[in-house]
Each structure stands twice: as C-alpha cells, then as structure tokens.
Image (cartoon, rainbow, N blue to C red; front, top):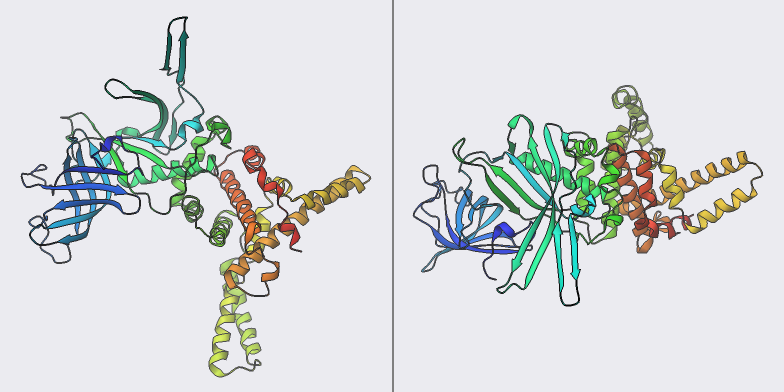
Length: 531
C-alpha cells in the first residue's frame, strides 16, 4: 500500500504512513538521531509503528520500563508532523538488521507542529464530524446546476451556505453546528471533481478555558450516544476529531491537529440512511437538544453511567448470539430502574437489614435444623438462604418491568406491538361492549393482559439464560425469531426510557414507536403463544 496523507484520513479508515521516527525530549523535539519506519492501521491489528533499529539509548534504565514511551514523534514522506501517544512495545528483533514495533493508542497529526513532550494535551477548541450527521441535520447546502443549449451543456454544482444554527450551551461548553464543504479535484487532465458537504460540531469552553484530552473523550462519547439514540437503531461513530492547539503561548498562531485512533470492540456497520429514516432529526429535537445533550454528556459521572455503558456497549458492538444481546438489554433495564425510579425496593434497605433480617435469620436457622442434611451441606444451605433473605427487599425483574410499563407511553408500546391474535382479542372485546364505559374497561383489561404476557415472556427467557432450569424451558423463548423479536422490542423500549430521561417530550417519545422503520415488530405473535 503506498504512503498516504494522514490528514485526509477519518477514524476507522486503514492507512500506511512511511517516515522517520524518534523519541522527543524537552530540549530538542526534532533530534538528529532518527529511525526509518512505517506507521500503519488495520482494524484487526490496530495502529502499529515498525522501525528499523532500536530506541536503545532513549530507553529508561529500569528493566521494567523498556516497553513504554509516552510519546514518539515523526515526520512522514508527505511532510506531515506526527505525534504518537502512549506507545507500548509490541516486539523486537536483534541481529544484523534489528527492528522494533510499537502498539499506538492515538495519533496526532499536523502540518505545523508536534505536541510538546511531558506537557498535558489540551485544546482551545474542537471540530467533530460524525457518520450520518448531515442526514440528522437534514439540510443541504449543495445545489446542482444544469445549463443546456442546442450546442453545449454545462453541468455543475454550487455551495450555498444558507443555513445557520443557534449555538447551545452545555455545562461550560459552547457547541455549534456548522455546514462547510470539501472540494477535491483529481487527475491531470482533470478526471474527477467532488464537492461534498461537511457537517460538523465546533466546541469551545467558556472563559477561554482549554479542553483536556479526558474531556475530549467525554464530549465525543456524549455526542455519539445522543446521535445514536436520536437515529435509533443506527450506530453513529466519530469520523473526524480535530483540535486547535497552542504550541507556544502568544508567539505562534494555534495549530490544528487531527486525532486518529482504533475503535474498540466489534464495529457494527453504520449503514447508509436518509433523513426520513431518522426517528428524531435535528428539527424534531431543536428545542430540547441542549438539555438532552447535557444529560448524555454529564450523566456518565452520575446515576446513568452504568445504564448508558451497558446499553451502548451492546449497541455499538453487539454479540453474534441473540441470547447475549438479550441478557445485555436486561441488565441495562434493571440498572435503569434501580437508578431512576423513586421506589425500587419493597422495604428500605437500612430498615430491612435492621428490623427484619435478624428475625428472619432465626426463623431460617430453625427451619434448616429440620432439613435432613449433613453438617457441611446444612451450613452451606443455611448460608445460601441467609443470602437470599439479605436481598429479599429488592424488586424482582417482574416487578421492575411492571413499574416501567406504568410510564405514560408504556400503554402505547404494548398496544402498537401487540401481535395479530392480541389485536383480534381487543377487537372482539370492544365489539361485545355495549357502552363506552364498558369499552374502556375492556380496553384496560386487554392492556393489563398484554403487559402480563410481555413481562412473563421476558422473565421466563431471563430465568432460562441465567439458571438453565429445565422447568423454565417449555415456556421460554430460547431461540429462533421469537427471542430476536422480544430482544428488539425490549431494546426499543429501553431507547424510549432513555429519551424520556433526557427530557425529550413524551409525545415525541411515543412517536418513535410509530416510525415506519419499526413496523416489522408489529407482526409478531410469539409472545402471545407462550401461555
């Protein structure tokens, strides 16, 4: 593969970069002693630097410190200045032609400067591009032009920056949407000309504060999760992360650096979509996305952090096995209920352990004495029962699901995704009712039955995949399309819970169920055939 310009690469794209590499120090960032080598990225192997020679003289003296460099600098044959961050040894060979390789956590590339060794990496501003961001915004600034006469035909495109978006404030960050363009001409003579809209976010901290590398990760992930939730069920990925860096305070203009790194996990494809395939485009959430985005970014430090981690880990890197995906969404639902509902236990924990556990322990001990078990087995059995008593104050999964369906859009979910047989039961019941009051009573009874069936199916499946008790098997959706439909419905319901939590209006949350892309989930009867 020939050398490539890293400044044209997006996150996740393969690249090969040939150049010279060295270990920087505070006094001399571009020293005389350099090593030829190749920096390359492939999804299976990650980002790896391979050099001819060894950084022997630059290594610390401690025997356990030989495998790591905080930073390696380089200059590519394309004259790009490259700073490699967190470099771990990945192997070496010693002999007539010695060589070393390093696994690289992140690459910072610029035309103008390297990062300064041993100084904190901070940015004055950020520019972020994401997959499908243009479709989410739903605005085009590119216009085709056709001018045809009897003898000639002129075909072209133009860029018309006709749309501006009001900036928002999230914490002490100012975030704005920008519509720019990229224009590329290739070939001599010209064989190809491409005009592409570039939709991006610009982020700055107020009071001219800088943005640390840790904050970059939080902001990038918060925006990514928000967009993935809005464009459910398409996973959204960062494509470009560029930051403005002040290399020498007050003496040089800010330098733009592009960050490249390897995405972790098995990447779920982000397929091509259109704006009408997006449940919530920018115009749908323009009035609330400031608060919603704040919840997504800062909730990771608060109660929703484990919920978001569990939900989006499966969203971006789903297992190949539906049972694993099902158990992941169950964990997310339980964590969500535990951390967001006002009541998530039958008795307050402190009261339970202080006022009830001691008495119950005595009753358990008395009962176990009558069980015909040997001494060691009796002790083990007693410890198991006491452990169950200790946590008996907590709601079961059945109770947690039942509570969550009490939300104002739980009824819409159960109604819309009822199977054909369930809807026929409702139709017959309504026809049998003689008054409007009777119809409402029968409708509520039907909703209660739908909730019971859905919760029953979920609990039975969870019990089977947790304990593999043969008693649960006959009534559990343990494979085939039934479990897949159940899993997809639960994921969609979880998405609705999160949208409601970040203050998207309830009517819009309900609309997600009515979106055309989920119509296939309305045609399944497996849940209603369990009992």
